[in-house]
Length: 111
Length: 113
Image (tube, each protein chain N blue to C red):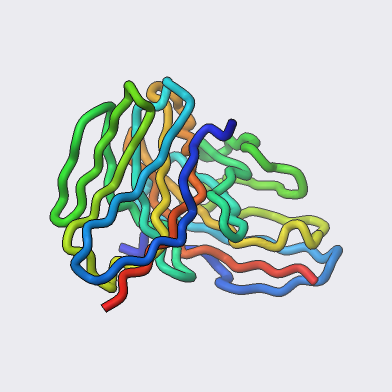
């Protein structure tokens, strides 16, 4: 049982480039989330999804987009990378009132 | 005022010590309270999960929730070097279909042999 899997683990981008962070879960969870974690800070919610085809903005959505075409996958897209998007990105999933389960993150540097 | 306040530390203790980690919050709607442990370069791992007030014990770990004071705690007994990590408190409101979590900043703990 893999849980929540994120790829890639590390990535360096140039300013203005685009990329997609991948997240997949094999627990049949309906809720999925994207967070970013900056040094010394808690996690901030970027986008979330309550099921396939349904997504909505979280606390810090600017500069990001998401889609949810299947229950398992919830990719996060950066269209025009900016230095302020240098961070560690975590994907999480849950079902019902159960707590969220997290992946191991993608470390992204934008230079 | 941030919704969840947590002292970032760092906290350094000798092996065998009792560790106390705390968070305060301002939103009285919070009903679910969690502690996550995060090792370096890894994702948060659920450690304790409680609903409403009271205590919950799991091995060397005890979580306490005092809703009247809006204060939650995590106690670690007989601390071990393997407990060295960042501990994040998180909470959410009941009835929220989103189940959005509000996180503290995390407390960095080092347990030295």
